[in-house]
Length: 290
Length: 165
Ligand SMILES: Cc1cc2nc3c(=O)[nH]c(=O)nc-3n(C[C@H](O)[C@H](O)[C@H](O)COP(=O)(O)OP(=O)(O)OC[C@H]3O[C@@H](n4cnc5c(N)ncnc54)[C@H](O)[C@@H]3O)c2cc1C
Image 1 (cartoon, helix red, strand yellow):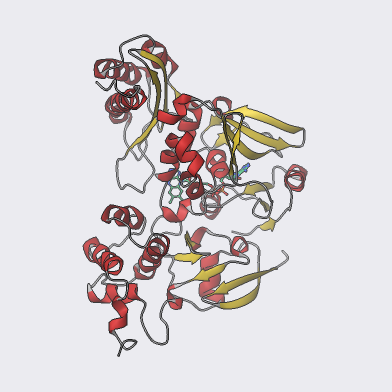
Image 2: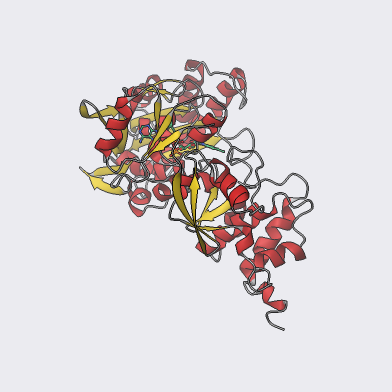
């Protein structure tokens, strides 16, 4: 494992360094995912472009009623942030359960998204929230909706020379009451077998449901066919169970070390029902608990 | 490839090291500074045998670029004892006992130190949650968790030794 490490002092310099030789260079943020891949020779770049000396890439700020989280914000600083906890507890939950305390102390939210691992915890939550990735590249700046950010296993739609600078989460009541839960096949600090995000708006009936799954496909999956069936129906356990059946029937999970396809399908049924029921419960206006 | 000067303050002593850019923190601690407490177990951030503190945060030094630790204060297991006096966690690990072969022990103790420095009164559940990222393959976890709880409950545990004598 041999490579140079370039240390730009600004986003523009980082973009220039990367764009000069996009095939031979690779961004490094915390390095927690990348170094493991380099050790295994999965990637063999000639140089890493480190963002660790670029100012202004970390921190959580309010933006247009929502939140803007710098790409270099460490996962531990995301889940401990008072704003994230208050306005987007579902993201606090999904970053708090990643890996172990050592990884969370170093790994960044931008690195987590750009690594594009299919059973990563935060991407499904951000997909359900309708978040966007703000990127800078040789052609300037653009926002990529999370729904379009993932291409395939470990592949994003970032173009050569592009760097993620922030994650933008729109303000929404859904963000305040959502549920994120993982189904674990082995130890608690491992990758999840499934990651389920359920966000709901409820009065007597279900007004909105958003549902996303990690660990079943090559990228986080939004279950729009289930979401549509929820609207206008009485938000109760029976509905949650019926929707979970639709979810399980509609997915075609990949088999991996966390479980075979048939097992994941059955666990989707169990976990989605539980997550939707919890999301209904949390979203119910006070005094209307069932 | 041009070497870089990386400045690390390890256990209170500052070193300016000339390093190849790809060097990892664990490798530098062991080969350059001859601090053998942190070990390479899995080499992939899973087992915690290489845990050291970087500006107070626990990190997997086996997957951390030394360049990324430039300017940081690093604490390793070798930095815990003072004047021949064991740190309360070291003393507690001995007394419970919380190890057999000892391979994971430096990482366990550094992980526990990171937790107690940040939160001196964690719940039992918080201790389990924090320590679950450090693996032990030969003794049982009950002794390890008991040692951490003992230091939480009696932070002055080690002063029973020569320091208080
Ligand atoms: C032992 C272990 C267990 C783990 N368990 C989990 C888990 O349970 N759940 C989970 O979700 N994740 C898990 N992870 C993955 C972890 O979340 C990622 O390693 C981490 O988030 C990556 O962030 P980083 O800052 O270290 O990125 P790096 O390792 O520095 O980079 C990762 C990738 O993203 C690219 N990149 C990084 N930042 C940018 C940027 N700003 N712009 C463009 N490209 C960029 C890099 O080029 C690289 O390809 C685990 C990792 C380990 C090592």
